[in-house]
Length: 411
Image (cartoon, rainbow, N blue to C red; front, side):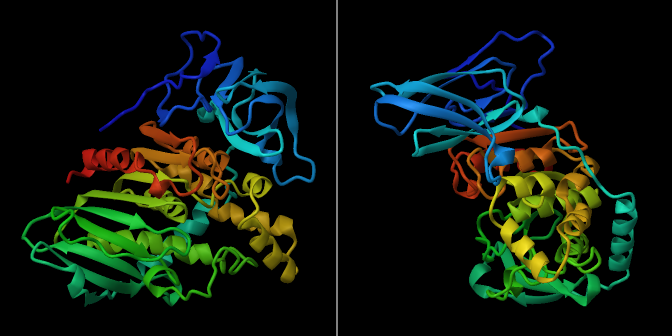
């Protein structure tokens, strides 16, 4: 397994730290001096896309970005050099994420000691009972899988199928699976999909020694109606909220692969990005058969703070709640049953998380609300400082992710 303990030092001026500072369990690639891992005071020294000359500089807390008046904690003047560099003393800052505002045109985020960001779990008292009841109901539903072979993505090495099976509440889940043809037992990689993402089909020659399963939860993936949306469906109660069934589908996917004759159930891993990152975390929390997970820019975490940082999909949820006459506080209380940070303490397997420092959809604060509450000490993270939400397009991340997962399940 590739373990990275690189301190981010280039372009960053940091005060000397004592021996009580714990080593970093993540790193930034490339290092632009935007992610500070040690104690302050801090100096931001970086290149910017701005013309040389005097400039106004502001630092805004991310938790105030949706406020009518964002919280400006530092306002000063600086100068952009001829080589487009700025050097600004930031002083001591609390752990968290901040937006830099230079003049009226330059905006980017910086991070301060992300592993010290605190967003404690707030699971309701009956959280465990609610999910135990849900999964108990699920366990009483026969899988009854139905396979449809996809010849154009099959060859002599692996055969591809679209599969569907019964899940919680009578809904259908399933996905796309590629199974080796040769006899034997094989590791399994489950991949959970992003919100509304389009399904794809595996290259049958790419990983001939592995079972790959791309999961479609209810109403998404291979079952998707393009007109549908899910984040605001069933807001009136925890029993009816869309993600109760979707989280059950996440578990049902593990049930399904465990029934495969060629699956080595001791070597099951899972991965996902955005909504898929949330699903992956929940899957590991509620099913110990998963031995390692990779999550990128995980969604559905830290709802109260999330609603203070971003516009979408918050406005869809609140517009739907208002249309149904639901008090917003009641909505927040209901969402506690589905907050991924409340599942995180139950994750005991190794975890590797990736995040984009500029993510406007699943912001770093909510990523670390999940990461910092994980119940495993075997966890690491990977940052691309210039990346927004599309971590899956960053060339540097897949090799790290794949090496990590391969070290646990092989192939």
